[in-house]
Each structure stands twice: as C-alpha cells, then as structure tokens.
Amino acid sequence: MDIEAYFERIGYQNPRNKLDLQTLTEILQHQIRAIPFENLNIHCGKPMELSLEAIFDHVVRKKRGGWCLQLNHLLYWALTTIGFETTMLGGRVYVSSASKYSNTMLHLLLQVTLSGQKYIVDAAFPFSSQMWEPLELISGKDQPQVPAIFHLTEENGTWYLDQTIRQQYVPNQEFIDSNLLKKNNYRKIYSFPLDPLTIEDFETVSSYYQVAPTSVMVNTSLCSLQTQDGVHGLLGTIIAYKKFNYKDNVDLVELKTLKEEEVEEVLKRIFGIHLETKFVPKHGNDVFTF
Image (cartoon, rainbow, N blue to C red; front, top):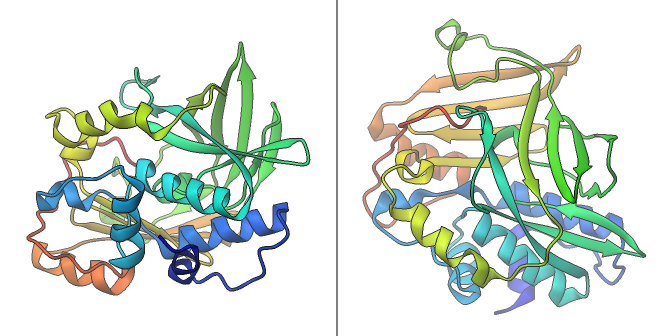
C-alpha cells in the first residue's frame, strides 16, 4: 500500500509534515469530499471486506467508497502512517425509529491526540450527520461547523454526539411530509466510550450486518458524498442534495425520485462510482434522514 496513492485519491497536495489541527482538518475534509460513504457492494452481491489491503484496493485503486468500518480504517492507517497519534473507538448508533442507541458497537470512529488535546475524527457517517472538522473532546461545548452545530457530552464515562441542524426548505412538495426529512432540529447521532479497539473487534458485527434480514444495511442501499457547500445523498432510488445555510439559517433540500435505470448513471456522474456487477437499489426502512 502506498500512502502517496491515498493522498492522490483524496486530492490532497498540501504539506503534511506538521502534525497539527490544520493538517488533520484538511485531510478529513479531502477524504469526505472524495470518497463516498456507501454500502453498494451488499446490493451487488459482494462482501464489504475489512482487511486494510482489501479496503485500499477497493477505495483507492478502484475508486469506490465504503462504510465506516472501511473508510475510518483507511483514515486510521493514513493518519498513523504520517505520524498522528490515533486510536480506534467504537460507537452505538442512535436508531430514531426505536428511540434508543444500538445494542452493539456498530460504528468505527477515531480519536486523535494533538499536544495533549483529544479530538474525535470521523470520515464515515452518511448525509448531513457527517462532521467537517475534528471535534474537541470537551463535554457540553457547542462546536459550530458548516453542516450543523455539533455537541459532545459525557455521562458516566460514555460520550454522546448530537447536532443541532437548521430549518429546511424543500421546493418539491411531494417530499414535504417524507420520513426522509428530519422533523425537528435536534439529532442524536451515536454514543461511545473511550476504550481503544482494533479492527478485529468489528469482525462479528461486520459479518452480521451484511447478511441479517433485519440489518439496515441489507434493507437500504445508500451513498453519500460531501461537497464544498453541502452533501449529495442517494437512498434507494431517491437522490437528494442539501445545500447548507443557503439563506437566513435555512438549508435547501432538493429531492427527486429516479427511475431504477437512472440510478447507475447518477452513481457515475455524482459519486464517481462505476459498478462492475448488477446493482439493485433498495429502500426498506426509515432509519436514515437527509
């Protein structure tokens, strides 16, 4: 594996000899704008592999995306390779339909320590829940970013990541009452302890969520890519673009239902994804919101 190939993949050409917050932020932003969060292999009859070699081949060489266990694993490798003090953590994702956090550690996220200050870094959460900058590991502090105001709070050793989002303007009246849109301005994202983990700790959950009939990843195909001012999202056959703060503290959300035969062209044009096998788009639940 070649670290220069990774940086070429994310389009990062700036110096990286300074292991500071600016460099960390720039690498994070380049990755989330170049590499989509997506689970399309599951819907193409192919596995979502966890080994670093397989992830590198899939994401860097074949220019695909992946889910958190792949994309944050890749980011962990890149940051560690250039010298950042980086730790893998595990998160329990908030399931809004059940009003609770998942029972198991589903989400891989990273902690990076800079001059004694710890930051949460995550390059792999879909749609507008994606952070654009590292978050200081400080409880109770509002941390405004372009997508939203993020909040970290700690309670009895467990940390909680939430966000306050803006009002949304949806021109297409067909989607005004859609479950794809958040109905209030507060979103719980995930909880996590600070116990260090390895990629092997996620092997069981990775295998399970690729095949379980109740898995959100089996029941829903999704793809998400950040831009300079918003985020593209594909959920089943519904394509969306959210432009953050397009006017007066309001986000613009444009949605459209595609014909199934249009989906693969959209994947190529918007997300840069060229699929090698037959893809069957699927949207079987209301867990994800744009």
